[in-house]
Image (cartoon, rainbow, N blue to C red):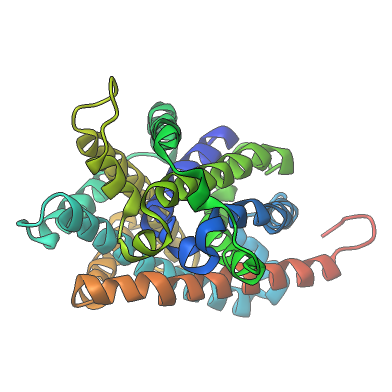
Length: 359
C-alpha cells in the first residue's frame, strides 16, 4: 500500500486544522461555563485529552479508522458507520466553509456577501484536492511555524495589559469549571477524524507524539481565556462573537503590527483552508472505500463539495442562527461520534484481540 504521508506531516496538518474550531469557539464557550476562571478548564481537560490520545493510538495501530470500524462492528455495520460519519463530515465541511466566510463578513468585510468567501474557499480546496496528500503536508509544514507562533505570541503580548483580578476563579465555581472541560475536549478531539487518513501514513501513531500538541493547544486556549477575560471581563467576553479579534483590533501593540487584523485574517484563512482540504480528502477517500465511483476521483470530490455547499446554504439563514449551530448542534454531534462511537469501537476491538495481541 502506498503511504505518502509522514507522521510529522499528519500531526502538522491536524494541528493547523484545529486552529479553525479554536478560533470559532474559544474562549467564549468556556467563559460562559467557567466564568472568570475559565482558563482552569483548559488545564482540567488535560487528563481526558491524554486518555483519548492513548485510545486513538491503540485503536489505530496498523489500520485506519474506517478499517477499525469494520474490524469492530463487522464489514456491513462498520461500512454503514463509515458512511454515516462521512455524511456528517460533508455537513461539517459545508459548515466550515460557511462559518469561516461569516467570520470574515462579521469582523472585517461587513459590506461583502458571505457567498463570495464561501465560493473562493471552496475553489481553493478543490484545487488542493488535485495535488497529493504529501504536498498538502509539505504546505502545512511551511505554514505551521508562522501560524502557531502568531497565535501564541499575540496572547503573550496582551498579557501585560490584563487585570489579573478578573481571571481569578470564583468561590463555588468548580461545577462551571468542570462543564468548561467539554468545549475544550470537544474542540480538540475533532482531530480524531484524522484517523481516516492513518492508512496513508508511513508510521503508526505513538502516544508520546501527541503529547506536545495536546499540551501546546491546552496552553494556547488557557492564554486566550486569560488575555480576553483579563481585559474585557466575563460578561463582555461571553457576549462577543470573536472576543480575541475585537481585543487585538482595539488594543495597541507597540512595535508589532500597525494593523494586526490583516495578519490575523490571513491566519484564519489558512486554518480554515487546511481543515476544509482535509475534510474533503477524507470524505472523497471514504466514498472510494465504500465502492462509489471507485476510479473517478473528481466525481467523488465534486459530489462531496456540491453536497457541502448545499449544507453551507441550508445550515443557517443568518449569522445568529449560525451561532446557534456552532454552540449546540455541531459540538453535540461531534461529541457523540468522538466520545461515543470511537471509544465503543476501541472497546469492541479490544475484546476481539487475543491475549497475544493478534487480530
